[in-house]
Length: 181
Image (cartoon, rainbow, N blue to C red; front, side):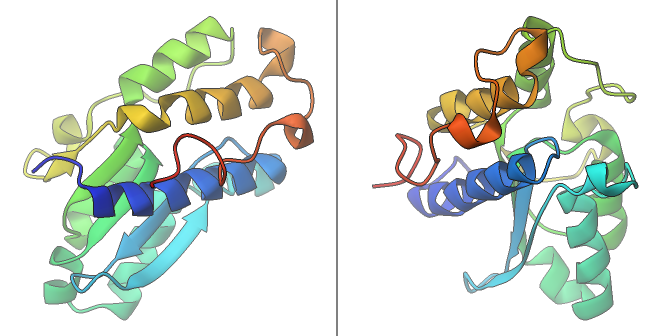
């Protein structure tokens, strides 16, 4: 299944959440869990900068889902995320039995951006989700979000090659070209 127009609307919110993470001093990632009926069940932003490097929004979704949803609702849900899951989050997704994953940018794109910005590499290999969770149903990336997401990372790592020096100087994603029409 390809990324649909409805998927793009949820991904636009994930990009907004990524911007909120950046505004709070975290790497820009945002994710949400949507039920089979289209209801937003849970959303979060990256909080790894608060002292626990595992506070990724995708892991928070898995933890919330296992505590609040029976298995049939978990498998029928969709996780939307600004960036492809890391290995830790992909494993959690598989272990709790969540449904489809739709991401705006891939692990390969993120690796390329971080390299361009001379930013520190992640401590875990940037594997595709299906390398960790082989039966996961995955769609992405969504190219229309690439420039907005890349701008968030440039704002996050300005001293290492980004052009922006202050997260408040970045343009908001809400009115950007990434927002669905």
